[in-house]
Length: 303
Image (tube, rainbow, N blue to C red):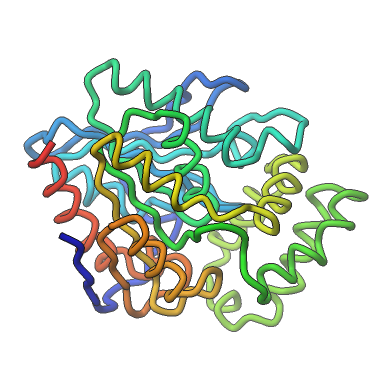
């Protein structure tokens, strides 16, 4: 039965939050896939959470979640998608479409399943579109979580406008142009001014290490991706896999209403994290976990 939860703000950690995970490369179609991995620290539930980041993100976006998930008895594999930060990717924009990246992740998940892992797949933002692609590519998962992701392309708003503005410059000047635009936008943000210098340096570095083709390919998808919720719903029913849609109460990418509608069409649980915008994993991880962990435990108990 679908549930709706409202949860409350407690903490605001970051990509530099301490954790017990170790850096491991996994084999992938395009080359090594950089991950942060943690084994279950509590009594094992024989499950692994595979966490996919959003556009310009990285595995470190899940740093505040790693130890609590591990402590709950669930292993963690947080991923840099091909072309992001420390994962290599091809010089082909089409390789970064959700179906293409989804196929890459489906292969990774199939190997994990063959090793006995029960995979809980979570995709944040663009990673949610990739997670959808992985499910449509027959990834053997036991449950799907879409976090601050949408049914299709970004709606009109400042994020989409920034993509329109950045594309010509990135095509001409590469990743450095994306970083220059990011810095000009950050200069007007009080949130950026309050970030520690070490965190600012990390966020700059990971963008500069990203693939130009990945930025352009993902940017195109974010302005063109069709609504494929109906197909995803049919596929999840065929797998017998439940789903959850969770988002920040002030998500400024896809609206809360559009994500609630997506949950309805998926027959998924739906949860809203208060005190968070587009990234509850760093803006309010404690209360995001309040939703994730009980939901995942219920899926594992029923599997």
